[in-house]
Image 1 (tube, one colour):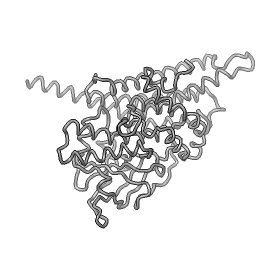
Image 2 (tube, one colour):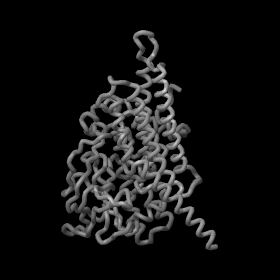
Image 3 (cartoon, helix red, strand yellow):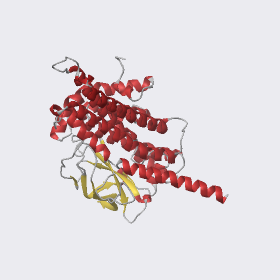
Image 4 (tube, helix red, strand yellow):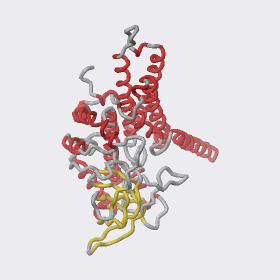
Length: 428
């Protein structure tokens, strides 16, 4: 259908309201696409995209209307990052991480409604949550910083950034020290949403959150790195050296983070499924570009399209299968995380995600490999759609966790649950 929105290729059963929000995304795609190659070449986020997305009203895409947002859901975000990924994957990735910040507002509010906080804690938690949501709907760009260079064998992300009580004059607050190794929109976002650990805590009960202004004293950018993929997402990270944050810009109620997660269907990053939509969008983009070129170009002797040669037919068939595999995994995960009433337990959704993330990213990368094979030496360049997308999609294989680790962790969850069920049946 000629009038079909790009986002509908992924979310093919959009409501009228979802289509209206997707139309806002559609309007910015030509500008994103026009700057994609230059952003990759420069290795820098196109700053004009900040105003573009802000003017389109998209900064509050998944913020409830009561807080000034557009009222979208994970379905809207997945459709948006998919569509943006087909145009400029780097901008799509940065936009995704901005929107993960919404979980730091929405999940605390759900936890309050579920009665997980005491009467004394609830007002503090609500104030922080609503501040996050109103900043986003007001047009502020938030960069969600959780990842660190410190890793542990038992976790994908270990939080070593510490928060200690401090004061500046009569203002009570916290002092942050640490380093965040990955977080899109470094030097671009208005605020960094920083996850830290209360000094003296070793468990998840000590995980806390802070709104850190980009230009706060003690905040510096880590050196730029010559990254393989998504080079225009400004993901080099920050250092925090005794950064003071007033109490009203912090959520430091012990155990708040854990209580928030009890209200989430997915991971603690929030709306994480939408990151894989970026990769599927990029895969669809390189698939369309390759098919169009191979169909348009012809053999000199026969005049027939290059796409019709036996070798190219095999490669195109493989690309099509891999692309469909990515769609199937992504749509299934989207269903599990959005359908009402839920059709799977939180543990089942989590295990499915551990497999789905790697499977989606691997399938998307395989589409780009096929594009490279089919396009020949003339397109085996560092610039252009094929070369850029191949590098962009390679990042999906390692971001957060590779496919192999996802399958391992999913198997661990599944077998542990089965063992627990068997033990319970024997014990009873």
